[in-house]
Length: 139
Image (cartoon, rainbow, N blue to C red; front, side):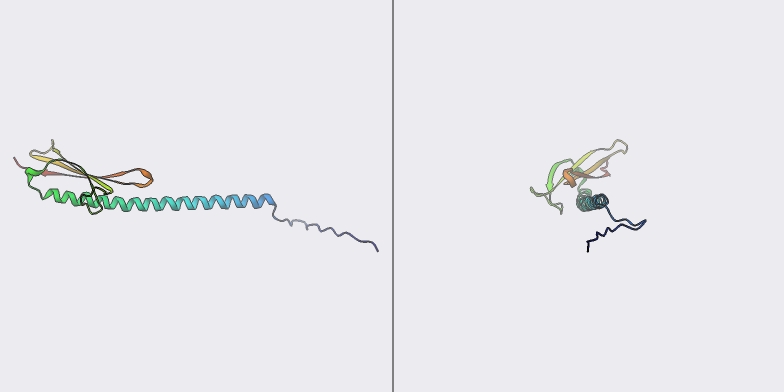
């Protein structure tokens, strides 16, 4: 008795996945994963920056309130100083605060007071918050 070889042929319209199809699917899947992970890193970075910016805003607003309570004769510009997250002067603080007082041309007997706070931003770029007001100093 002879041996018969059996050949299996796919039925009409029936086909399987080829190696190219599998590779294309893997490439598309990996590209999607990379996009999702990079957007996750970006969102985390933006949340962190928002948190630090909020602290910087609090420092600027708090210091502006302190400046408003000063005697009018004591309203003078101050050099930049390092402060911590509570606005207390600290040589190792991550924030830099600056006070600028200048005459306000649009209002008689008034000065424009501006507080700037620089903060460490995301991706190595520092950010800045500015708060300004006009204070009547009298004549």
